Image 1 (cartoon, rainbow, N blue to C red):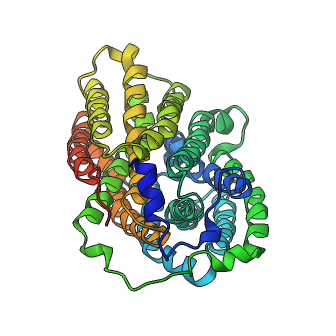
Image 2: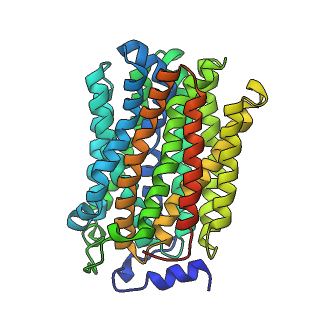
Length: 411
């Protein structure tokens, strides 16, 4: 039996209401809604990295504090993620998504004020909103599209990465050439949020919102006691650590190696654009495999090659685009695997939400240490090689956890 067949078997139990199972054609409104939310999930974060030097100079921040700015959304993810499934059960999944979009709008508005406290406060609000999206989108996919998990995971990860890549590449030109300043360049990505909120307002008013995750709530064994759940959570954390360190500090690292600010920003865009094909293809392939260990091996080889190339400076600046592409493909594969593990390693939407909440709480707590530690190591050593060694070590641990998380079992 194929993995998709296994998913169908697992999701026809009592905890998933029959009326929630949609095809991609009959559920096109939910597909559009998922894409719209996905477009808002990375740009508020990826737009910060290329502007970090400007923000640091304008607000007189140390490298360590600047790294903390990037870590704040991850801390917010960690704080709210465990509670998102309960909120969805109580108020309805669609309504919680709508409330989170409103919170995201407020965060964008606060961050427009060019000062340290509004920057921190707005970033925290943005992080809390995205935390809910991170947890509930896999559950929404499991609930409404149990037979198209791979395709739908690919759709929303591609949307997320596409907008994130555009934000990275255009942030410096928007701030400097268009004259928006660093705060305006961060805020312009908020224009998508009211449109998305309006769409989900009508979804939240429908009868489906109340029924969402309340059906079939059963007493279940805590996932916090499951070794497989912990493996998935640690995999989530380490792939996130690599990604958020990359978007936060690689622009500074690359300018330190002779690239211009704009070129360094476009390298981060290249990193995310190179993720796009694999973030669509990998979930589909993974959903059809008995286990995903071959994909984990390919992921690890690409990460070691890319970070090793940057560490040793192989080819000088001429090969930096190649190492960035390898990092993008390896990182995109790890992200896609982390997302689909949340559905493949669970039996139904309720378990998917619980595993997602646990994984993103534990995972992002681990990931939040990355940008701050990376910046601290740079401050202490005055160079980039020791911080890069940190990422190489994390890549090794990522491979170990991926090997365990890819086994054909459910929590």
